[in-house]
Length: 341
Image 1 (cartoon, helix red, strand yellow):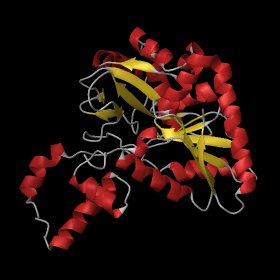
Image 2: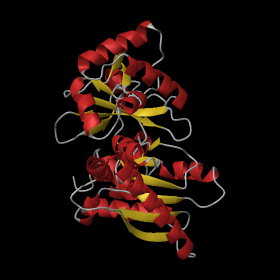
Image 3: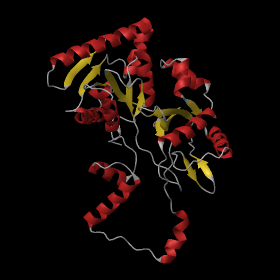
Image 4: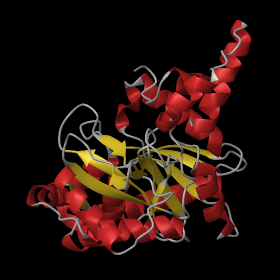
């Protein structure tokens, strides 16, 4: 609960060692704990192994992003977008065109079962696709609560790497669409979502794919959406990809929610982000009035009081101030804090 990460004791051990949270590292953690405590693993009898063989869960190797995108695109086309979800998306600042383009869809267990039958009838391979598993036939991950799928797209190809579901209610609002506790279930990496052009001068970094989509809609500035404020495992690959497309250092704008001022967990994660950027990329922290928690909230407020013209004016000033700071800092890669009003 303190570190705001999911998983069990083996995941905690992996996290404290700085290892990625994977099935392989859980086994590695178990072995390390045994060695540290001087515990010898018990050897099961041949009879017991035979009795438990049917309970063995065999993970599937993650399919390519091309295969995942193909399956997810077909899945989403079979799902509806409920009126309340579309209204909520529009209230956040997204247009009808963006809602359709981004591919959000509503999800319930019944809708999922119907979509699964469609995929099976069309002979679509589900092996290695997170969200599906095998149990006397292919099954789809279901949830007790209804929600909305949010596609998480790859920088470059813009293909769907994975899906997150945003629940309509409950304390936990987001989960990855994945099933790792069943045979041929496939684990996920905490992929970064990317939206916008890849040859820009500056990029926002924020938390969440949906938040990233809204920020891009209202600012026109490309955004990297982390799966969580601490989910930076796959971020270096995205940063390197973007830098290779340019012949000069690019600037990343830290747009984590303003509650980093009062939330020690977010503050700690921001520090880790800055350490990752330090020495390689220009970085600045964007600030806005604390009455609006996220940059998406603030830009929506700006649109309400001054329309898209107000939003574009804010972003133009932000870009100009960033350029001015870059000329003044010399060798210092941290551009400081930029307030936008």
